[in-house]
Image (cartoon, rainbow, N blue to C red; front, side):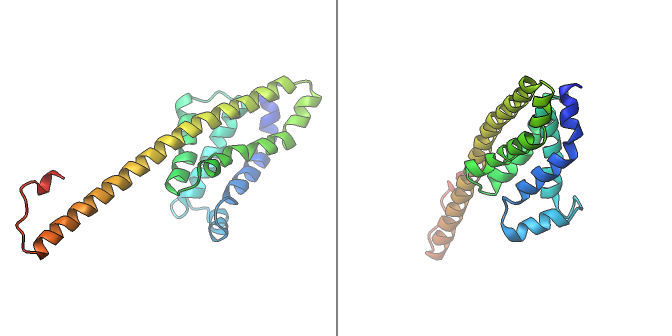
Length: 178
């Protein structure tokens, strides 16, 4: 039996448990919605989570996945959590939730078949995905911070213009340059 077959045999079980563990990281009122609403247009977070989890699981398992597809899946997890103001540890937790499930469902069978080395390679792939995800999280948070700074600058410029009008002061010619 090839190593990928061990992962494939428990794929649906592991994915369901992993996705539910990810949903459990959200506030209680959100968790029920994420689990119960299956429509991708009504519940895009759950849909993106399920899709990204499948791709990441397959990449960890050693299935041939295009690097761009894996990066996009990681980005879906990370960007969403960066925008939602999760701490870095909470954002990266989604990947670490997979490890105990792999150890529960995959490792014993692979160890018994003498394929522990292949299993450990899968965990190494997961660790690599976590590192890539952390880089992506950092970049996403930088973009969020830049957007907030620009928003504050725009609000400040609007307040200055409003204050100048209230006081009767003429608007400066540099108004459009800020």
